[in-house]
Length: 435
Image (spheres, rainbow, N blue to C red):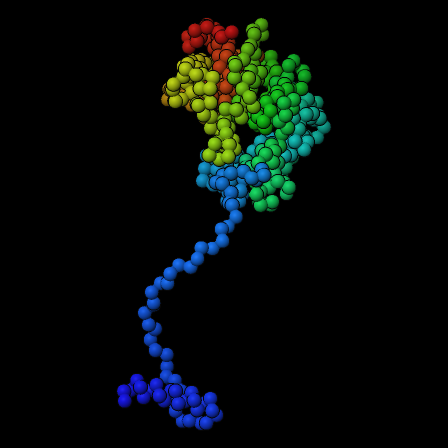
């Protein structure tokens, strides 16, 4: 009898003995053997019951964009958040806000505070009006105008979703679990008759501002402006004692509206056809993105394809349509040189302030220029209204950084008049004053 057979019989006897209650002195089983090779895969089973219909990619169901829950249209690759990261709004916004007015635009809750009529003013200096409509200037007892201070508490500059959009527990996708199209309302009323104010009063002595109605772009106006009421800012005698004299950076509304520059007495100022663009800034800078459920592009980068909807014969790929930007760039360069020759421009951060160098004049970075205290005379300049106005006009066009795209007619008119004021002769960069 083989060993395998003998072992098997002893195991079987042990089992039988235990079953009958008889004590049998034999081992019932041995240890586990080695694991054998896996067997062959069996035949597939029958198909299961079909599941319910799913949502289409990027589709909208009952107003909710369902794909990936709250990832669409915000957190997908190339979605709103990625677009915002490529915008200038994602860059550090005056990281240390500190006191003063900076937080009104650079604080994450700057718009929220202003729309709620929350601000700070010096004691007994005057009473601001129309702050919820964006007006930051007000009449004071000490001088012609003051400027409201930031009413929030943040000290770090940050522009994010909640800066422009009124997210709250009823519509925040992170709270409700999904994005519902059309519920991310902007903080500033954007109806057809809703207005915001530009700091440009119609007559001297008034601090009322200039009403504008740009629908969805009303939210842009709240910050993209000079913050100076040029009507009262330019006086009969203007002392240039600081590199910060003049309009704040980013005065695009002053230019686009055709209202924010220093307008010379006796001359007529117009505006271009761009003023009729629907939703103004939003129309050019936030075209709907078809691949993102037609949500507006949050890079805020203008698209030349939008320009071609009107400039139908233009075949170029940049914004120098009809050579307009080249013309304005040449005129800005002519005015920059004339102002520099007069000792009014610098790029120095501190004294002694030097005039622009040849490299500065050639680099085309007009927005980097600042006013030069002291200048050629070695003392603070005191400028008459017309000369100060020409300097102011240079700065709002340079700092708008559009080279004529926002309002070509108005910008060329301001440049013509300002060059003529400083040089005493007609510009060589412009064939004539636009009408």
